Length: 279
Image (cartoon, rainbow, N blue to C red; front, side, top):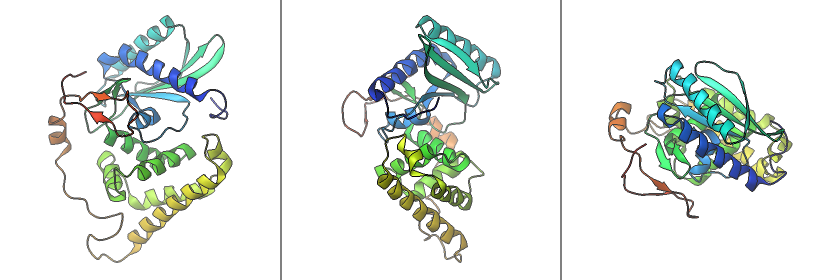
């Protein structure tokens, strides 16, 4: 789907995405799918940028048979809800659904399989990636893809102030053994090649995008300087050795229950209720 995402009724678009996400998360709950991508970032109150698709991902242990069964259940639920559905790019671990209604193209839904460190969190929309896993996914998007929307989300992640740059790099390494700060800096530098008009479709003005470019390029320079500086210990800005953390296995053992988050209020910082139910 292409076009200017800020034309038309963005509230209606967002409401449709939430409706579809709820419908599908309920339909494929047994397969362990959760809301991921920009939808998860939005649920965590990090960004409100327009998005044109819904991303649902299952854990990395999902088998090909379980994945195909979930796709069939998802298509049945959508058809019964009145959507026309077609599939593309179907494999044992990825598929894209194209949704239409009354002959009009509505939105795409991506289904995938991916590793995650934490248990998902139950929100009003359904199970959602943990904030850490959602942010790590955006870092991976910048690292491997580097599209304008990825840079916009990364800038929002840094602006919200919940993670330092050092912690973001540590998240990248935790989720990808091949994550390299020098390569990440090179990817950050690619924002200089993006035209302001490309960001305009997300409601970002030329002046706002210039500021985003400046912040991102400054981080890229900092990381490149750190990579070429003499080894003087652990004081390199944005690249310090993080405090040792418990292993992923021990983290997961403490996250066997899903906290319920109330997103009905307007507080941009989610309130987590005491754990009381699981998916």
